[in-house]
Amino acid sequence: MLKELITKKNIGLGCLIILLFVLMEVFSPYLRNSEDHSEYYKKRSLESQLKQIGQGLMVYANDNGDKFPEKLSTLYPDYISEIRIFFYPDDKSEKVTPENIDLHGCFESVRGLTPTSEAGPLLVYEKSNNHWKTPGRCELLVDGSVRWSLKKD
Image 1 (cartoon, rainbow, N blue to C red):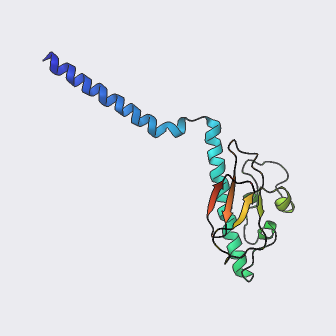
Image 2 (spheres, rainbow, N blue to C red):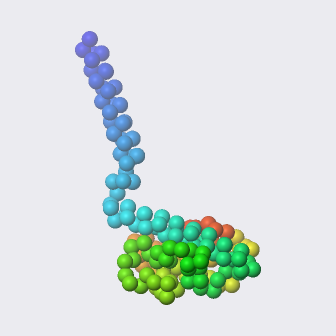
Image 3 (cartoon, rainbow, N blue to C red):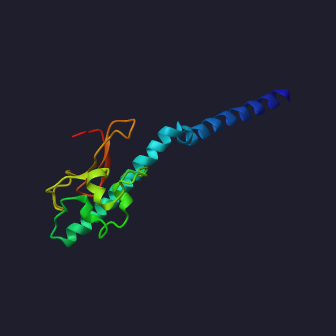
């Protein structure tokens, strides 16, 4: 009887330990340093902004003989109605104006590409990478995909 009780307790304790390890693994992303967590969401937000810019660029090109605009500010307000798309999510300054999209916005476009350019070329990229702990930047490719790149060229 005592032997059975000890065995059942050991099995229960073992299950509890396994359950704790599983829960720690599942919730570990939420237990990270809050700064890392914040950076993760800022990067996802920038990727979302780039996708919206990519959609605006494609509609613009469709309306303008398969040519992308020379400046990103051309997209506002006809193709992208929300001006905040062109600036960092946490930018609360007075620089967030239509006149400052190209000068103070967080993205730069590569000129001379068309929607029919080969799939690999970089179309829009994050100007500055000094907002991140890790080196790199967000990039939008001609095919509409968005990536995080360690390149700085």
